[in-house]
Image (cartoon, rainbow, N blue to C red; front, side, top):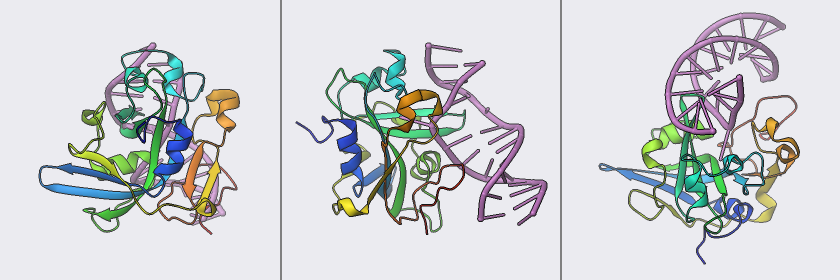
Length: 189
DNA sequence: TTATCGATGGTA
DNA sequence: ACCATCGATAAA
């Protein structure tokens, strides 16, 4: 069983601290993942797979370990890792990373759109296998449970009960965690 | 510092 | 007609 062929929430937890590597035409960019969200299956109304099998969602139901990249609000890309068994429409959205290599000083990598832009990820990467052909993940220092914080996923208010599930995970005190809109939410002291 | 608003295009 | 968003601008 591969790393990815497990429930999305498990993978979302273990991706914290992992390194995401993108290589293309001579450059190499690496971030340490600090924020993820699990989209756990067809029954999860916040998950795109809940729309059923369509050209867009097909990759979610396919083999684990592939990229699911989509365009949102007409201008931003979101990068996901397809998880769980083939036939299960589940994925993990990567929402923030700490720049480690190949990124200009000061570039922001908090938020799924900014992260994709910084790494050069686009629809061209959709459905790609995360296996070293310019796009892959590497193990990092494990992140202990004491450093993991959880909360509701961002921007899925339409999903009823599922909007409140604590499927957003992030590393406490990281400066590269995105901040959701709305009041009272403090995650950087 | 927080709040509001509009850009922009794939998807169904 | 929706959106798993961001950056500019305004208010304070």
